Image 1 (cartoon, rainbow, N blue to C red):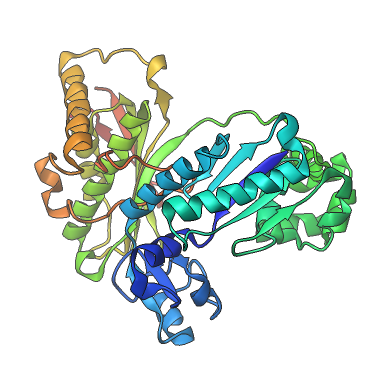
Image 2 (cartoon, one colour):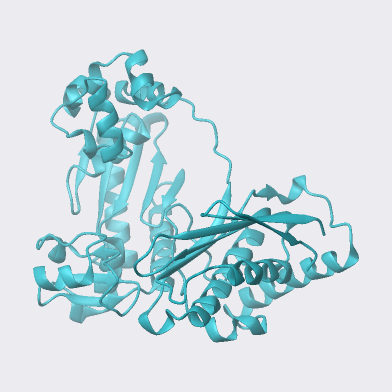
Amino acid sequence: MVLFLDLNSFFASVEQQLRPELRGRPVGIIPNDCDTTCCIAASYEAKHFGIKTGCGVRDARLRCPGIALVLSRPDEYITMHHKVLEAVDTVYPVDAVYSIDEMAFRLTGPDRNVDRGRELAMKMKSAIRSHCGEFMRCSIGIAPNRLLAKSASNMMKPDGLVVIERSELPQRLYPMDLTDFPGISDGIRNRLHRVGIHTTEQLCRATKATMRRAWGGVVGEVWYHWLQGDEPHIAATKRRNCGHQHVLAPELRGAEQARAVGIRLLHKAAARMRHEGFWCTKLTLKIKPPDAPSWVAYVNLEPCQDTIRLLWHLGELWKIQPYPFVFAVSVTLGGLTKSDQMEEPLFELDRKRTRLAHTMDRINQKHGHASIYYGSMHEGRDSAPRRIPFSTIPDLGLADTGGMGAFKTTDGSTRIADQRA
């Protein structure tokens, strides 16, 4: 049995817990203080007005004129996440953390008993309230596997507790819409429709062959076993890239100001890459102008952890980007390889620069992000604040901080650049 815990409206709930004046009010969490951004989270009072994640600020104000739009404070959410982990650990050991507001517990031995599972769930809710505050609510699902437990946690919100027993399968699932299952997007639903699956009952009765056809491969067979209550083995996925993107505030949309933000994003991505023990072999820059198609270019690299070399290549890419005004910037480090699979750089200068990058990381981890940084980041050091990825919770102390390469652009042209920087 798996117990899946989902913290309800997490970012908004943290703000309501820390700021009593927001309690009982519709709250939307926004990344930037401008009308062109959107809500990245909403309190249940705001959801009552139809305001959801991704709702634009203008639309949110139209739907609910009294909504409190609050700037995101990622450090507070990360701190609360760790407080929640401390609280539930007093009840039962965490098996896996899937995001900042989701975690799972694998119940074993006598704890697999349904009544015992309910007892543990209620103790977790109580521990979170005591350790983190009364506004930190969660919904819990208990089921034979992770997919069904997560689905059960979504059935009753906020502050719900739903148990799905194996003996109830698959009939217990029939009332659900296809898109109620985590992982079935509108696109997957359309693919299911193409193979004749329009309801959850039809999904549960489908053969392995039909499921493989719908998903286009072995993932469909995994879903077949999940719906039967089994826990199929899933091979670990390989990390392929590490990056950051940022929608710019209006005063930062000139090309030069946007370039400073791009430098900041690269610092964050490079520090995170080193922290997770990777080297990159590709740097990609994506530019989204206000009213035109996105522009993308990349350069292939020798394995690199050196921020100085990455900054040089980012500068070369920026020289060929065509837009005077920029709405959003994305910097991605790709082709990641684990450090234990790498050899030391051949040249002493490269080794020195790599050691310098790690030393700067340690200083920023100890004294706070951007305590020390390269001069090219100066204009953008306060831009692109910390963001929380879906599947990674950053440490509070972590700084957000030879050969030929080819630049490939969206118009199909290719430019060659000397990689010696």
